[in-house]
Image (tube, rainbow, N blue to C red; front, side, top):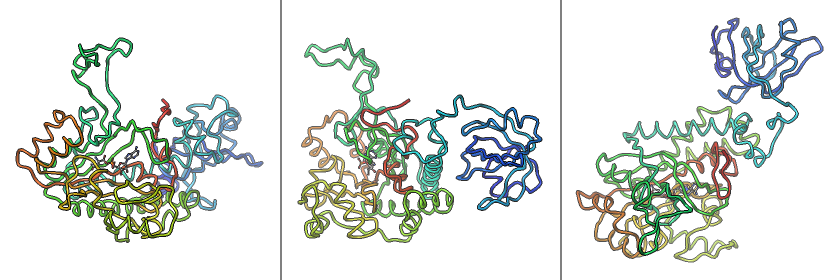
Length: 466
Ligand code: 4AD
């Protein structure tokens, strides 16, 4: 018996008149008066379902085929024929239908074939991949992650797996989830009455990482061109459509590099992955264009051909102050930009992605390289029209004396950064890198409004299912 996926049959990879078996889940069943049933089967391999035409002559037609409902799992064996149906390339003339699993109670099956709200689907994170929308998002997500790895591989970067459990706070923002095996009701205390972490699993306080950057920097300072791509965690109480408590981050790090080097790297990488999605997932992108964002495909095409606009933070403040638009949050030099400001700059002022550079040092992390003016650091954010910040990066402070001063000024525990200081003590080099929020990228490409709908199992404040 030869098996084929839905995409193989629909794409014509199985010869007409050949017999194959397709396995998947029933999307719909329709019965004609002439005693034939039409079953649509999807298996996740592409956007479309395949139609199987099932004749009443099959031995289990009455007993099983006519009882199939949405969500049942089946194997349909049949002869591949060219389809007469509109928009269908090939279909199966079924010779056998095997039922793997029935749907307990079809009336209460949560994924009935109709349009559900994204909020509703979130309640069924384990079943929503059976819907058109989540299936399409996850295929695009997969294409994006494969394209990212391919981009770095083709450009000579090594993938470094940085740890998920860490002892240092990369961003210094104190937004870390603690990893502990201590008994919460009976926490050991030191003589000073503080929690005694020396009795904890790692013998010290440990956390889930907020970023792999500090670790990947050490590999850049040995292997030159590296990146890490993995889950990161933020115990940040931000209940917005752009924030997750667990999200994936792509973090390249490049030795002997400046801020501009990684700004151009970010642009090249984004264009590469947008192109990959346009080429590899036209079916899903057509669906997003029809259902979610009428501009989805043109927007990607524009991005592939656009020159990203580099802009200084100081110039951006002036633009925002003089644009005549009323913002909820006032703008003055020294403030962190809010999403309304970022969106204005990218969407309305420029109409293309903006790379905003040289931020005030006081609002940025300790590791960013100080500029000559003493007020700003060599940091950048990439702002995409329609979503705002998707990338944050910087040149790293490679001068030990300046780094030490910064760690002290910011009251960070110097003893936790010993390994980081070593990189500046032993053969230091200028280097730079960035972090791309992977779910923000997926949301941007698909046009899906809420970042919780582009990750399989979203985690957010007061929300963690399964
Ligand atoms: O700007 P961030 O905090 O930068 C860093 O963590 C650096 N250590 C990265 C580096 O230079 N290697 O985060 C980087 C990106 C943001 O631009 C945003 O896209 C995403 O990560 N991000 C989030 N995405 C979803 N939910 C959150 N809570 C996020 N916080 C940041």
